[in-house]
Length: 444
Image (cartoon, rainbow, N blue to C red; front, side, top):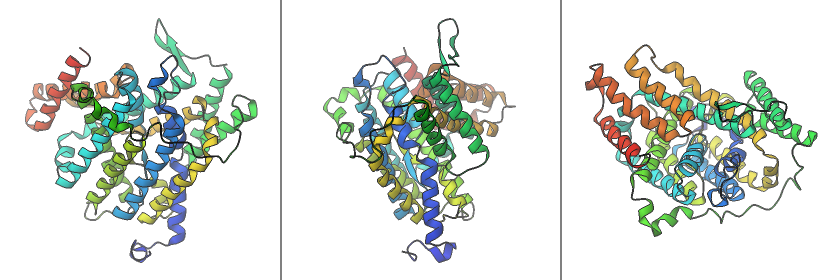
């Protein structure tokens, strides 16, 4: 085992790797609670049950997708990088694909499956570098920041901190409402823990918030701590149902869904891999060894996750927490995966995860993602316009896809006017046509 993971060469040992794997798990364990709440549209009232995914099944799918992703990354790519269904991608799935576009969640899973398959093909063929280089850096950063704003808005809305107002669209919620105060308390606690740079701060913040809710009676006490693993049957294999009616996937709307899943996962994964590997000192000559295996592991995890019944599985930047305490090899990822498997036994605790409990996680993740705005050159107007529209249109239209479409339409236009058309990759012109068609046929 030590020889396979090259412990001696990388200056590590079992103690460091196990501690690193556990730390990474605690840092990203919040996804076990947030993902089922997100995909079941728990914060949205007045919609048919057919639009909601089964929370128990999604909980199991989330844990299993994370297990498979971590094992692939640890054993194949040998990196201390953990995977699980991604934040932002689950928001796009639930609030844009299902809620806004009206696409059945079963067909949405088909889109996730397709994106994973395409990701795998692009990785094997080597075309991934071409696509990565085609999308301007500023737009990549704007997409990440926009998703951060959107996720934060979802968290604030679901917890009641902001609410609907006919005259102004949104306004401050009833701040003296006990459940709203619980969410505010959770956000404050989590911010303090994050500021102290405590490993697992987001997860610990959710635990403290849940305990406060139980003590005050705002959250009902669960029947037990350890219980029977929920059935994954309600979501398992649902990704294949769309093949029974090809008209549901042979249209521009579905193409946009697949492209968006692929786009976000593609760059989120690449950025995370480079950031964590660089922190761990695993980069060589500014290149990532075994990059193909790492990206392929990500695509395989997405495919498996879609079959189980969850949104796109991706690499987690929280892996940096494990690296910070000494993780250097894929053995740490294997440990993280085992932790996700063990977490299946604690499904009864899901009952305490209300919108007030998940709000702190959504707000903090939003803060971390919006930090990418600092990497955009706002002094160049031709860059600032598409970047700003990409970012701002996501929360304002309640659609990640619409934000991406706006930015990718205006980018070629502003660059041509600024006489910088030679800097625009042909792929960007192709995406311009695709997103114009998106507005004509989907929102026309």
